[in-house]
Image 1 (cartoon, rainbow, N blue to C red):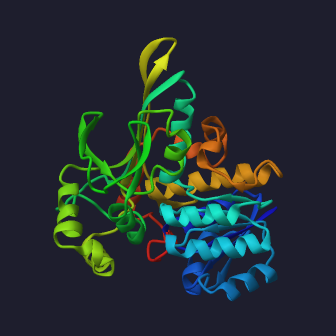
Image 2: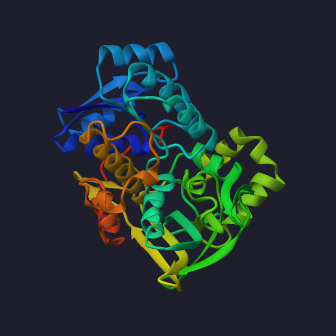
Length: 390
């Protein structure tokens, strides 16, 4: 049994702990500053292989003492991005593997420095974007003799938008604000550059539905650094319904709420509902030369909510948890193969899709499961919807 400490019993941590514990190969400790929230999640799982712990992971001494008293092989942070540097430092001191979901570029750079020379693996930016999207892009990139452009697009959208933003909260509010407010990495004319968030607006039509996409921070992961100089253009944009970007520019730029993120967070959480009825769109387009011909290859996928262990989980919960669980499974099951800083593009797409956790990316679904669960009241509890963590 691999022993895993999952920090944060929120939207994503709840499913991570359940997937790992239910596999039969993991003993999971689910820790949260709110012990009652952790207990609610573990009780809803109904598994002996997951236990609840009350722990303030932002307190270095308490986190270190917990790991000393409750030995683990790896630490998974599903906490807000600003908690991860300290968690990474303690994890390095204790010689454990480290995984996180951060989209924050400065936090990832801090983890990179912490990981230097480590015997254990440090794998930041797991999940969907950053995360799985880079793994899918790497696979397509490997099919080309010469790269021209790499486009990564991801959106977690409500199936039935009915407000001015055409959006529902499916993710960490802090994370969304961070993505919309921070500088973005991109490759332009072969050079690694920073570009502004909420810019680069474009239209995308998929399956007859029109969407918009625009620059957001963090989703590219380390892919731009890896392939800068090999492609003329590499960029990441978030997919939303048309009109969303204009509304967010008003809030963040015109009303200057990017400079007062606490107020913006309160506004969004007071006005925008959570939903389990979402859809995740994953889109990668790579163009370049193959056998002296200019060609394009695409990876396009839609993921819908599913019933897992008797409860309805949203598409963003499933794709994020599946992303980090599949990567973790590959690392801990292949002792000695991974050490130091490990990038998402160091994993093969086929290995992820063949993995017991990555299988959720390979399924074709629809909105039927969530509609049925909502209609019959079978959504279940313990999905982490009340927590502040991811």
